[in-house]
Length: 145
Image (cartoon, rainbow, N blue to C red; front, side, top):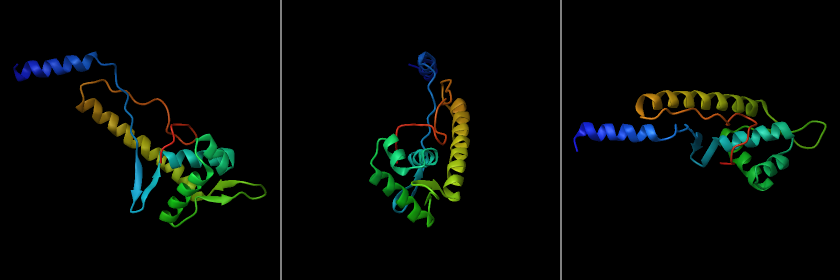
């Protein structure tokens, strides 16, 4: 088969595929492992909305101990707290650093995803479509991190 026929065959096969959806999973690692990613974003967003690390952990299907460990590992790597005891009630609230991380990570993720989508449309034979759901702070996606 000639190179031209092979290329046409590949493009025709690609045209028969439903438009794939671009998914980008980004996280940051440090020497000690996971530093920050979508799972941490989800956990912090739920702490912010529920006011409780325990309730946030349960909402994500994880134990309090696992959630606490993830937060502590990130805090140790950053050298700053992400959660503070809520004043006047039980539970936790986000520190200014955590609020900034939630906002900036979501924006960074959107920027990278937009660039990846742009490049996929140039480089790949499919009409790649953007993902229409999470991650944005407070929206659920399967827990990871």
